[in-house]
Length: 353
Image (cartoon, rainbow, N blue to C red; front, side, top):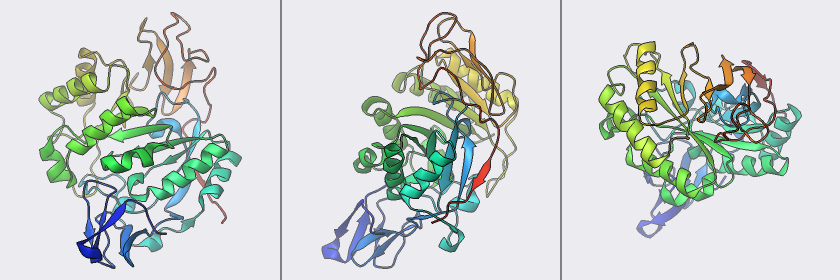
């Protein structure tokens, strides 16, 4: 499929991709860093359009999104490739794939939306690898989802150009942005990218869009988990994204090309205390079974209004407006009178073209 987000340069001898900050300049036949966008016949094609690594029904909390219709199910899918080169990637078998033949699942946008509705899903998530690189194959299914009354979610590293943000995020109802670290050195050495554009995306989402935002940071021992770096991160977060934007600290496990030990529970607990100390009200701990790590507290009275265990909601004390049933304080996010009951399941789904 002929993609958007490009323009001709050098009197048409090459084309430049305008989708992400890499601005790949390509001759005919060349692929961008992401692998799935290729220069062809004077333009750039999205070679993975209509093809996915697979479809699966997940709990919405797996994205993770804790303030976006808790307990509901989401139809998730991704493609191949990525525009970052993270040495610690935990979806490396998909994001580092360099063979489109691995994309065995095929479906058009309307088919995806109809399958999600038939399966009882509340939303569709573009995830696993980064949907920014398959933007057209996220935007089109997002519009199809809205036509059927479904919600849409983008799980992304936020490495997108300023010119492409509005087009990509316009049909998204919620996003979780993976803030890899809070240092340019980390982004350069471990992601082959830059921190600055990600921070710009986060500020744009919070200040100029209507998209519900939650943020995740994977804490890797010895790389981005120091008390000093976490302090810088949470202070910036409080100032620019506000105290009511949820922040998820998650534990690293050794994977792909990075040789680092697994994140201890003490690191997550310390990071949460640092975040709370600067006023952040919704700080979650993931990838480790820590008691209360996924619970939601009321910012007014401090009561636990959502109690969770491994994607299962144990107790829910919010009304239809997302207000605490004890004190009436309204929580930031999107809630209904009753939570979903999908629980900690993962259901592979086959969509017949």
